[in-house]
Every structure is written in C-alpha cells, then in structure tokens.
Length: 391
Image 1 (spheres, rainbow, N blue to C red):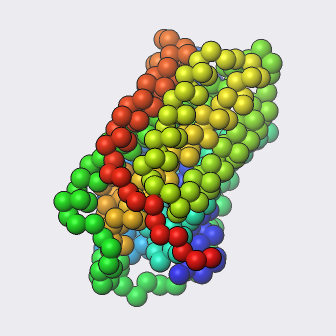
Image 2 (cartoon, helix red, strand yellow):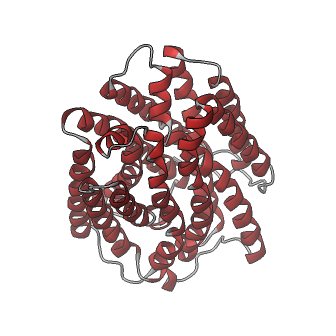
C-alpha cells in the first residue's frame, strides 16, 4: 500500500491531467482574438494533435511503466506536463501553441496507463479507489473551467497555462520526495493469482478497446465543447466568461460524484448491467438536450455529464478484475493508444460541425455515439458480482 501523501498526489495528478487538456478549449475564444482569428472554431483544429498524442503516447508510457517503473514515470509526468503548459502560455502564434499543446498531450498520456495501475496496487476496494480517482479527474475538468475562466477575465489566457504549469512542477518535486523508490519494476514481480486466461484476455481487450473508442469520442465531444455549448444556450441570459466558467465547473464537480457512486456499485454488483444502464440513460438525456435552451439547459447538461462521467470507471475496473498487475500498464496502454488516438478526431470535428451545422447537430451526433456504445457494451462478457468483503 502507498503512503497517504503518495495516494493524494496520484489523485491530484489525475485532476491535473484533465485540467491541462481542457485549458485550451475553455480559453479558445480569448486565444483566437489574441491571434487575430475571426472565429474560435477556426482555432480548435490546432488542438487535435494534443489529443492524438494523449492517446497513442499511452502505448510507450504503459510499457515504460511496467518495465522501467511507475514512480519515475510519474515524476516525468508532473514535470513534463507542467513545463509544456508554460510553453503553451508563452506561444506567439497558433502553430507555436499547437506544438506546445502537442507536448502537453504527450506527457498527459503517461497518467492513465501508469498512475492508475500504481494507485490500484494491492487496493482492497478497487471499485471505490477507481471511483474516487475518477472524481478527482473530473474535478480537473471543473478546475479547467473555473480557473481558466477566472484567469482569462482577470489576467489573460497565458496565465491560465503558466500558473498551473509551475504548480505541476512543484507537485512533481513533492512526489519524488514522499514516494518510496520501487525495489523492482512491475514486470519483474511474481505473478498474482486470478488473472484471465490468454484467450479470454485477448477477447476482453478487443471489446474494451472498441467500447472505449466510442466512449472516448463522446467524452471528447462533450468536454471540449461544453463551455461554448453552455455559452450558446445561455447567450440570451449572460455572456460573462467567469460566470459561465463557474457554472460549468459546478456541473463538472457535481456530475463527477457519479464516479464515486458507480465505483461503490462496481464492488457490489455485475459490471455489465451497470454499464448498460448508464449508457442507455446517457443517450436519452443527450437527445433531450437538443430541444432545450436557456437556464433549463443547465440541469440537463448536469445530468448527461453525470452519465458520461459515470461510465468512465468500468474499463479500469475490468482490467483490475482480469489482468495481473505485472501487465496492467501495458494492457491499459494498448487499449488507450487505440481508443484515445481514434477518439482524438472529436477535437478536430467540433469546430467544423458547430460552424456549419450548429450545436443541435453536435448533440445529435453525441446521442448517436451513445447508441453505438450501448450496442458494443452488450458484447462484453457477463462478469459475476464480486464477493463482498467484510467491513
């Protein structure tokens, strides 16, 4: 088991991971004006490489996590993503910003295949641990909204990158100080009992990867457009970026609680039934959102984001259930490289879709992706409910 400071920093890292990936999407209107672009939609494609590298970088990151060590990889994560954010804040053109964001994405790719398996080593309640960790990740989305909105209003978009970047470097130095050095890399440890047979693992990995790709598309389509979507729906009521950022932060913070609830349920009930139920509600709520505007849109956005966030813990929980710890970073890296790499196209799609067809079409596409996710998840193996441990 890790010490409490290490556990806290591993959860903080998840928040930082998602926060840095969303700063650009939250500040894109201000950045576009600063760079002389007429529309924010024209700047959105410059962020696609960050999300592509966030996906494909998971493969080498996972391999290094198992073969070199998870502790040193997490130190690289904290320092690397922090310095990359500082570079983004110093960019003087759209292409310089695109390069800095690509570095942010590359270092961000380390966390999920390395940080989560490190946190789950010997976890007594993996579902709960995943749920709390997922909550922290989505609080990072809330921080991106409220902190970036505040910085844009009071200090400019550059400070929204630079200040959090420096804080991440400090966290990396603290992590190196409080986390014990690993005696051996995970791949060199003795195998644990309970891993799935090779054929079962291969089938599970294939289904999880396809499901994660459709889920990743939905996650990226929502989180990278939610700020502008909310601003559009509330345009008749307010145009204050700090207020909109605060509302979105509140939505993310409350919706993220779904992951803690789901994590607790995963430790008690069948994964497949829970997963399908959440995705079904997800699609219905997003479809309903196409017909709503004004203040009524706020609670509806909260509900469909709760369903999107609530679906996140399932694939990590299945890796914990079926995959030996010696392989978890590599298996997670393979799944994430495909699913996140493919779903990064969503970041490129948002600008052209909204520019040509509006937010109703974007929401309709998100509802269709939910349907695809549901169909794929029906092919997951039925996993029995775990045996409940005494309190």
